[in-house]
Image 1 (cartoon, rainbow, N blue to C red):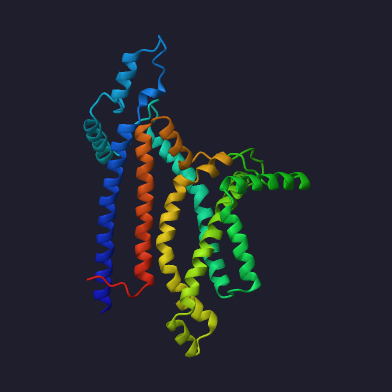
Image 2 (cartoon, helix red, strand yellow; image 1 turned 90 degrees about the horizontal axis):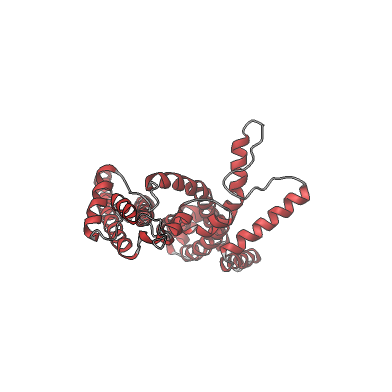
Length: 335
C-alpha cells in the first residue's frame, strides 16, 4: 500500500509540475507581447536633439531586438530563441545586459526578503496558534489589537518610524548600532567586520518586513486554528488522554497549516517584486526597484525578465505548497 501511495503522490506532483511549466511559458509569452506593444524604447532618446544620430539609435535598437519598427511576432521569435537556447534575456535600451542586472538584483532581494519572510511566517504562525488557544483572554485581545494596528499602517510609515527610533537610539547610546542606508557602509578593522556591517544594514529592513508578516499571518492562523480546535478529531484525541499541547500540535496545528501553505507560496513570491517601498526607504537595489524602473524606462526585456522571475518564484512556491500538502495531509490521494 505504501509503494502504491508513493507512486500516486509522485505522479500527482509530476503532473502539477508540468502544469506549472506550461502556465509559466504562457505567462511570460503574454508578458512579452504586452510589453512589446505598450513600451517604446525610443522614448529614452531625445530625438529633438539635432546632434543625435537617429540611424545609429535605430540600428542599436534593432541589434538589441527592441526596435518597434520590427514586427512584434518577429521580435518575440528572436527573443524566445535567445532565451531557450542561450539563456540570453536581452539588453536594456541603454545597452546593459539584463542577465547581469538580474544576477545582482535577485541576490540583493534574496538577502533582504529571506530572513524577513522566515521570521514573519514562523512568528505569525506561532503567535496565531498561541492566541487561538487563549481566545477572548486579555493576551488574545492585546495581540489582536496590535496586529490590526500594524496591518492598517502603511509600510512606508512603519519603515520611517523604525528609522526615527534607530536614529534616537544611536544618539542616546552614542553608538552607530543601527545602520539602515544602503546594503553596506563603513567597515571596521576588526575580525568579521564586513559580516557585522551587512547584518546591521539588514536589521531594520528585516524588522520592517517581518512585522507585517507576523501581524497578517497571525490573523489567518488564529482563525484557522479556532476552526480546528473545535473539530471532532481534536476532541476525540483529548478524550483518549492526549495532552492538550500535544493534541494542538499534532492535530489542530497540522491541519490548520495546510491551507496556509498555498497562501505562503503566493505571498513569498510576491515579496520579491512587491518590496519596492522597503527597498526605496532603505536604499536597497533589488527586484522591486528594478521592476518599477523597467516599466518607467520602457525596458521591454527587463520588464519581461521581472515577470518571468516573479512567475517562476510563484510557481516554485506553489510546487512547494503541493509537496507540503501531500506530506501533511494523508487524505491527498490521486489516481
